[in-house]
Each structure stands twice: as C-alpha cells, then as structure tokens.
Length: 146
Image (cartoon, rainbow, N blue to C red; front, side, top):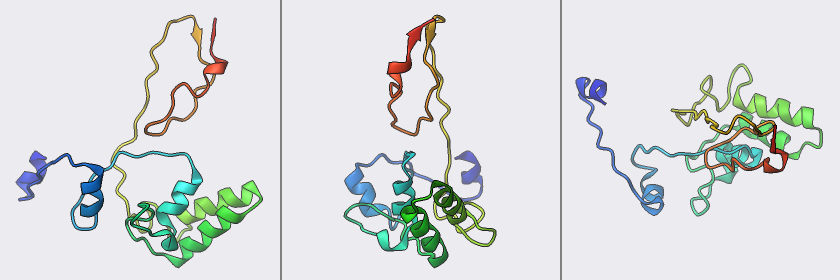
C-alpha cells in the first residue's frame, strides 16, 4: 500500500459483513476469498443471463455473447472432451474470453498453495486439488500407515 500512496492513491481497508459487501460490490472495489472446482460456478460467474443479485450469480454483470455460446455448449455437452474444449475457449479463444488475456472482469490476486504436515509414516494417497474452503479430508479413506 505504500507504493500506492506514493502515486496518490489512498486505500482504507475495512472488514465488512457479506450483507454489506454485496450492497457495496457495485460501487466500491472489494476483495473476496473464493475457490471452487465446480464448472457450474464458472458458468454462473460469467454467463450473462445468470446475473441475479439475490443469488450473487454473475455479480460483475459480465456480458459477452461469444463466451455465452462457449459456456452453453460446455454445460450442455454430453461429451467430456467437447465440454473441456469449450470451457477453455470461454476463457480465451485467441480473440476473446473471460481470462486475463481477454476481458478480465475479475482480478485474481492470489493462489493458495497448501502445505501438508504429517507424521512420516502416514501415507495420505494422492491429495486432491483444494480450492478455498475445501475439505482436506476428502480422500481420508485412502489414508494409511506406511
């Protein structure tokens, strides 16, 4: 924040309740902690017609018809390869997308790398990717003493 202050930008960090954050999110910059591995979350975050202030879907009011087409195809495809390809195209197709190469409606500031500290003789199998707020015990049935 010192660097911003040198540029004449003053930031006042305030903790707020979610009710307050949701009412301020259209008029003030705000920071959220979030993470999910569910593709439905991507769809609801970027699909233009999913905007709904009561459910916080597409709260940024993102609207890109090309991305909408990719998202619709990905969500409705019965073929996993087609779905994956369309999720990727929605992020960036070489011309447009919701990623940092395209419209970048969200500014992703951090990625958490989890550290597992455990007894040497504990084998926890293959840890799953853990989004923010995930269940680190999701594969506990694989755990065993080595």
